[in-house]
Length: 364
Image (tube, rainbow, N blue to C red):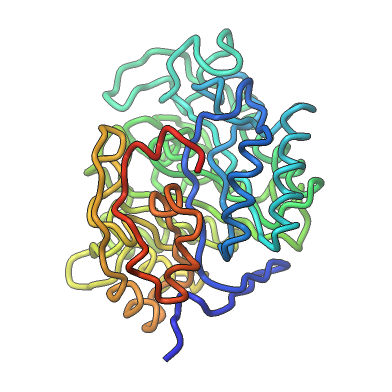
């Protein structure tokens, strides 16, 4: 039987030769927010090694407080866009496909950091995850410009020839803060119940579609957990998840990237389906699963210097053969080894290596 990870996949104007997605992983190697030759070569190596779709590291939109690190790339401004044009061209020359992940760090940003240290930190309500009011509630006009900032960057991606875009709506950053009731206490159309709190992301999807046209897929990454609270859940039942995701389906999203820390863990009691499996079942849309694929430990350990041992892929293949999800995002394994997909495809499993957390400090 052929390996389900290496079957072709198509969505709108994007054709992939396999189901392997390079997961977005923050890399602080773009001084002043401009991706350089080293960054272009980093992505080119993976495109040349049979990655179906590269989703870039998070790259921030043009709101002044969108970024918390001046060495993380931005997706606006002449110099950065010229750098991204070079990245896109190099990936395409290597016969790859690439999507920028559009990002706003929200209240995870510490004041005085990022590319515009004087810029204000955006939020849904000026409230921290502990319920402390630290800033004024943004006006509807402010929120509308936050929406527009994503659309502006999406438009740049289309003009530069990228194959898709991914909107980062996970992990306790700005969009996810709008989803989360402890941080979003607004009383206008962007607040209220979970479906209303999803309106911010729905408008971003809709405005991005206007900016990029009909031929590029829009991917939305979302998560239940937050970096501020690993146990947090937006939806406690399949019914709540279905209503939440329908907001994005109606807005025109194409693919749901369902972030969880370990892909093999069930999302709800009474079913073995993971988050991507439930999202596909409830919406009918293609989904991307992610979370410690090919490794034994989750990625948080990497940030405190922990490595991780290789893990078998049999369980992943079984879920794919059942149609639980469509695409598989690979993070740390690809960060360390650009040829990971080729080795798996060719059965060269003995050449795979345990993950070394020191990889975070280099662009292999």
